[in-house]
Length: 420
Length: 214
Ligand code: B12
Image 1 (tube, rainbow over the protein chains, first blue to last red):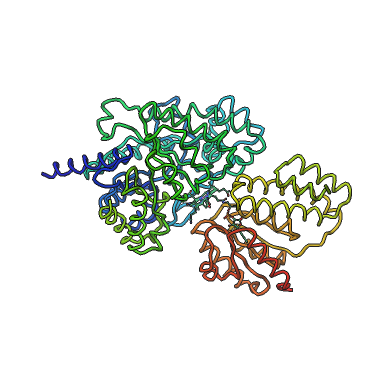
Image 2: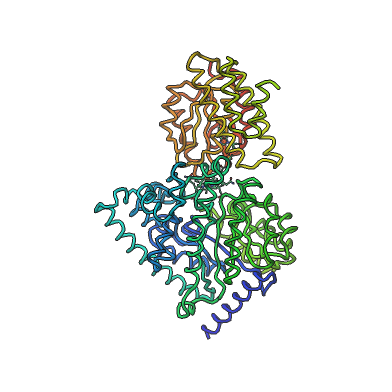
């Protein structure tokens, strides 16, 4: 009986998601969240953000509770920040993919990286983890990086980025590597357990991987954000060559992580993997930089995804309106475009009926608004997309603030059920 | 075209080579530092307008700020040779826990271009450091920058610490950054707020016109 019911829910949700991606609508518009360690999830389950950062099982419990109570169809997000600088370690040890690029509070305390800060460590127990970034490559080192990115990362960036690996032939360093591996094992087991629990609720499991535009990789992990922007002005050929040099490693990571053997594929309900790309430089770049450098690189990734049957879910951070039209370069119905705070009428004008669009609820509204405000917002968004065709409802951003009102969360689902 | 006008234009065009050449020439020609700074200010104002209109992007704001850092570097060498008149000192920093500096740096450059002596404390600045800097530099104005919600508490803590050190009535405090508004301004106990550089400059100019703390 129960099992039957779960299967029914599962089929229904799969249908919702697949129809939305194919620009249609199932029984309801899907509700998707991309939430890392966030204060609402922690509070709601009775944990601190430090708990979620340090114990992937607690992250799991709180996530399952959220999915169950608020009927989330696509719950993405991992209990951490990104440690993408370690991406090339998957070259020599393929089985380290995909978790090698995850940074959690525990991994941070082991590696002592300089680019993130954590609740219960540098921050108080109830803060959310922060990505702070740092410069790990000087201008005159670009050529060395371009020549052989993994070599440069292994030899130069790791000792600069991880305090524990400052002296790579020290006991501290060897010990840290062992502990890092142990932590990844715990992490992977916890993620597996979450998937099983979610599936038991009828929440479809999708093969997902997080990836970056190589320019964002350079800006966030190699050169530091504003230096990367200055490089676009002063040394565009350097940053371009560095991004080009990273591209094959990023592509291989995506390909290998999502191309699972048949016995592993059985654990997933939707056959097309989703590649989540959070874009970072997009809003900053002028049309020339965007159109000549950033977007062509993005298109290489997107086209490779499409060719292999993957669906890119692209998070356009900030206000992406000035660059919207470039999306018309893509074949219709192949991506999910998630917008943070665009001019929505412009999004409708350019993309409606061409690509699946995602987003709609500013996280600030969840704090300051009333359930009526939330209902109005959901209604408005669905109306923009003709009742929600080719649309996935989601939050503007990946962190739900601690003062998000529970009744507003309820209002999201209730309004979805009411209007779509 | 005068060198001054050419400098303004070179800044607007973000032509680094030209900016450096003209500034060097103006220094050799013994042009008043204030004239060079005026030209920079006009350039920054025009860049701000282009940004508002959507012709320029944040990438241009960041580069303009970098260009002005270069110009100020050249001028320091000149200024070191003799004192120049400043409108007054402004101590500025991004508050504890927050490391965003792109906006703050733009404010620093614009204030400098408008004749202020700016003491930039950097990012993640503790209340104690602000207090110490106020004691040392005796500014007319203190600017606190914050972009994340978590910066509101530290802004209040900083202003409380300034109060506790009995320095509050000697200075005006302005807060700035993406998160700030009227409500936050009164909550943290600042005198005013700005979420763009031109408003901030206007407010500070008004205060200094009234000769705060002197
Ligand atoms: C670049 C950026 C980063 C870079 C920072 C690079 C750097 N060193 O500065 C990196 C990647 C490191 C980063 C990290 C984080 N960021 Co951030 N970041 C941004 C981003 C994209 C742009 C900020 C910016 O530079 N704007 C451009 C400048 C020109 O604008 P501005 O700062 O507002 O400054 C203007 C005015 O406000 C004013 N002004 C500013 N300061 C002052 C001071 C005075 C005295 C005056 C008068 C005026 C004034 O004048 C300036 C010029 O007009 C914004 C999103 C966005 N699009 O705004 C997010 C954003 C600010 N970040 C955000 C977050 C959450 C974070 C992280 C916590 C993310 C994470 N979970 O890891 C960390 C925080 C780290 C930390 N401890 O601070 C959130 C903040 C949300 C919130 N309300 O809390 C934002 C809004 C993104 C979002 N939508 O969620 N970030």
